[in-house]
Length: 251
Image (cartoon, rainbow, N blue to C red):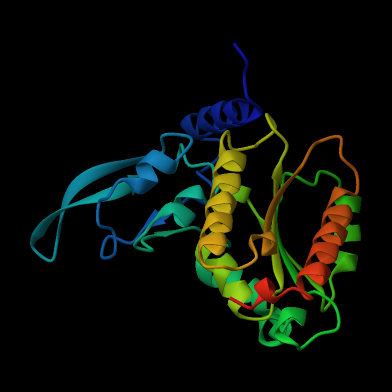
């Protein structure tokens, strides 16, 4: 039986908490006023950290989600899955991510497909575990410009389809989601979830008669080096081609 690194980290963390050596770290939180008790987050959590409890809110009996801080691994998958916006996670809540996306007015400037730029403008959501070396992150940060905005996520499964569409309706010509290689996901099935969301968005774009190539999913493994610049260059080439096709109309 294979043992995943996240299982080891979780076991060590739980032992430390139980022995009083460390308090639980940041964990997902539930807004009881918003929670509908739908259990989507319960099914999405890779660690079984969320269950449902019966409680009273405003004198009414309600069933809502409850997070076990000792089991939560801070991946953010539940936040992206929650249909009512009841889940939040410190540093990677929706408001924080949108702020990072639009910092410096980046989203306010029209992209090439909107006739406002000479070159494609790409937003990249990158799993923090898919790029391993600090030197590579430093190199990526140096690449950020008007044509490329990089937003780190705790997991590619945290990507929210609404944020992808927001970017495309604003100043981004394309959105690239980068997750871990097969079998390397730090949060068990986060890569699977991230890729699934992109595939659904691709299908939706096709049904609307829009260019599905504007949204792409890619993977970066532990042994990969400088893979993101290559992925960005490929998407830029695709977007330049789309700029000359009628089907590339803005979302």
